[in-house]
Structures are given as structure tokens and as C-alpha cells.
Length: 248
Image 1 (cartoon, rainbow, N blue to C red):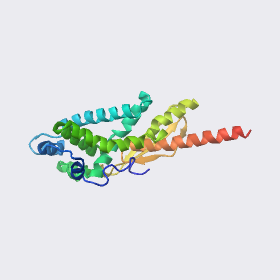
Image 2: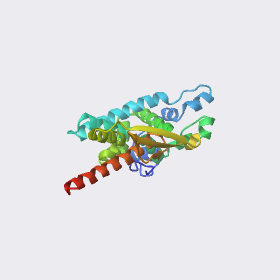
Image 3: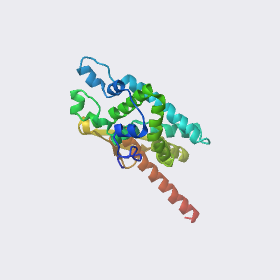
């Protein structure tokens, strides 16, 4: 499975370049605060860190994305809207936005987190993206809205084309329910050092185990395993249907 699950967002621009292009400002003090991870704060006299900004940014992002979904997909049921929102505001998507904009280069980490590659950890990058959005919102709500819409509307439009791939685990569960099969179960193993952790997932449906999937997170590995199981089941259903039509 490709590392990037979503299309490029910032066109390779750095965060500061993109802010300049959009005409979006961030108060310098708030931007500095947004870069401070709690591990750095604890090693430097318990100074303020970015978790409150992260909390705010998460809420702002959710509102802007939800409003766009509501207006852009007037016929979509709540469940479909919820799936689209979950795909777009997931940690994986936020981390890819951060990687595309070089946000990891700005984060201030404690020695332990820095030594284990924290600048590229999905959870840290996702949290910092939300903290930056929180800082933007406190500086200018309209600026935060502009930034979010510029980056996340393309992700929404891409997610809307994915069909079953929007959430492979849910799609697999629905397919199993349709066939009267047991609910899928997952077994996940991990390997590698903390800064290069890899996860391997296998999915079982009843007594049957499907080819596994891997990823940089447990969720990513499970989604890949679910994709492979879903596609195998759908292929078998199509073959059975063809045989039935042919009188086999």
C-alpha cells in the first residue's frame, strides 16, 4: 500500500510559504507555542506546551470540515458524512499534511523523543498540525478557515471517490454481514525500534485467515489487511455469480 493515502496537499510548499501564499497570519507567540511538544516543555522547566492549542485546533478542523461536507453533499446520509470526515481528519491524514509542509522540522522535542525520530511520528505530526490550526484560529478565525479549506477540500474530494476504500474495515464487516459470515477479527504484531515501528495485521473471518497487511500504525495495517480480505471475498462472490449465470 502506498505511504500516501491522500493526494499531495501543499504542492511541496513549506508551511510558511503556504501561509504567505494564502495571506494567513499567525501570531508569533502562538506559533512558537504551537511548536512546543510536552516532552520539550518538561525538560525545560515545565514551560507551556501545545496541547491546549491542539485541543482547540482539533475542534476547529472538525467544524470546518463538517460544515463543508454538509453543504457539498446534500444528499449524503449521516453515516456517509461521518466516514468522509473520519478519513479526512484522521491522524494519518493530518500527519501527511504535516510531512508535505515540513512541519516536523519546526517541532521542539525532548531529547528522548528527538532521539527516536519524533519529528516524523504520525501522532506528533498530527497533533502539531492541529496546534498550528488552533494558533491560526486565535489569530484570525477567517485565516484558519482559509487554511483548512485550502488543504482539506482536496482530501475530501479524493475521499469521496474511494467507495469501499473509504474505510476498508467497515466495508469488510458489511460484506461479511451481507453473506451471513462471522464478524472479522484482527491480530496485530509490531516490530522495529520506536522511531521506525512497523505493524503487521491479519484478519480472520470464522476459521479463514486472509493475507496480511502492514503499515506504520496499527490502524493502517488493519485497514490494509481488511482491504485484501474484502477484495478476496468480492472476487469470490463475482466468480460464484458468473458460474450461477452460466448454469455452473
